[in-house]
Length: 145
Picture (cartoon, rainbow, N blue to C red):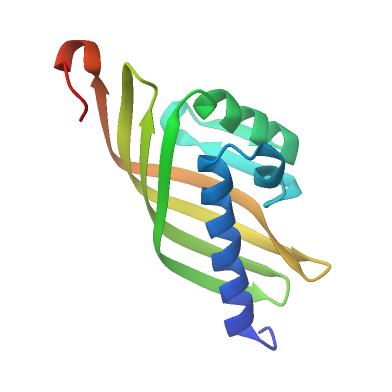
């Protein structure tokens, strides 16, 4: 068990906070810096797409939300330190993605693994699993959800 588990858990919480902030503000360079170089993302809701490598993860996410207004929230983390340099976590999540004419509100969980390199925590892998996805099309609704 790590010598300072509370500090490591807080550092992982701060890491995830940066993930959400950099994603929603479209700060792609900083967004990439939250991932390990060899990071992996899995997206089972889109046909089990797996993306490997920091740069590829950024390009995939950027391709999905670049032109959208997004708001991502992570709540109630369950973080377990598995060694002095590894951890895993589950975060309840909500996202609002607005492309103008259409978009969605999503609810679910991030399931993640973390790695500590040279004293700094990174997201090693993440998988978003959705419990619910409410899509809309303003052309048929005539108003904002």
